[in-house]
Length: 310
Ligand SMILES: *[C@@H]1O[C@H](CO)[C@@H](O)[C@H](O)[C@H]1NC(C)=O
Ligand SMILES: *[C@@H]1O[C@H](CO)[C@@H](O)[C@H](O)[C@H]1NC(C)=O
Ligand SMILES: *[C@@H]1O[C@H](CO)[C@@H](O)[C@H](O)[C@H]1NC(C)=O
Image 1 (tube, helix red, strand yellow):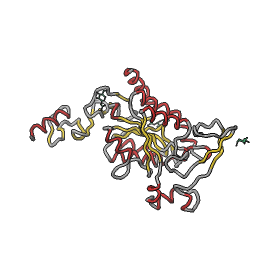
Image 2 (tube, protein in one colour; image 1 turned 120 degrees about the vertical axis):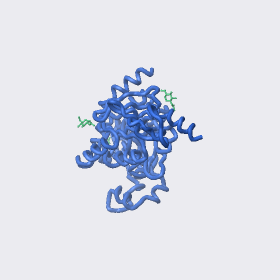
Image 3 (spheres, rainbow, N blue to C red; image 1 turned 45 degrees about the vertical axis):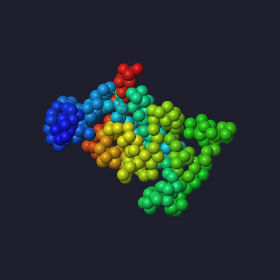
Image 4 (cartoon, rainbow, N blue to C red; image 1 turned 135 degrees about the vertical axis):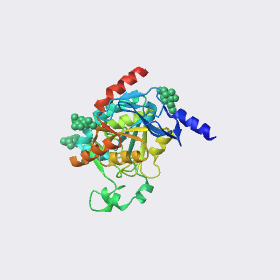
């Protein structure tokens, strides 16, 4: 039995016989189930499944070769609560939406999944929320102004593309019920502007997947809906964008890195309200944990791979 196990592992790992499942080939990093191959230039992240693989340039430590059906784009917290004009949302977050939509479309065209993970609390989450989180999300000094509090209503011009399709209000301005703060299914928890339509239609078509989260990270603890999906679908390689780069994006990226996923931070589809030092810290460490790039570095390679698939 032992020798056939060694033989089957040797088949999985290119280049060399393995000892206890670990390859003796110095260009193989990892075990038979989770490994990278170091190339003369860059890295092969396909774990031996090179069919349909795509080579993407990276500004540093690249290029990387990815397996499209093991690679996802993760978009984090691009929600009305953090971005909408009427809620004092971040203009820098709104400014990355066009680049985000382009990257989403490039992933879809290359048949790679788009994963949305957003705050979307249940009553159970509200009951079990730790004090530091409740305090972090108050709008006054009262605990009653935190998660789950009624955010009242706002009036937006009829041109606002965050208006729910179910709205029956007529006239130049539309009143929107903002809903309870970051509670699942509310208007404030849904993606901002054009991203809402992208998310809804992507999920309906099966190219996109939506996961509620109840902390900054969508990957914390022993498991989350997002992690279960990644495992069930054999994902290995994750690109990240959203807001805030140093909070929910960083939290989700770091937990994914801890759990063994390949992590690539996409700078130009990420933003934050924090001081510049926060982004510099994230950029520095993302480069150590995996890769950091702008979508403009690799989107043409994605598009060209997609056009060869048609
Ligand atoms: C991944 O894609 C390749 C072709 O590009 C295919 O051979 C393989 O079966 C796919 N794997 C899964 C799990 O869909
Ligand atoms: C619509 O909103 C704008 C901007 O807040 C305001 O100037 C205008 O008076 C409103 N129009 C109506 C009919 O309420
Ligand atoms: C992305 O582009 C910006 C603006 O040109 C630049 O400052 C930043 O360093 C780039 N990020 C990467 C990872 O190259």
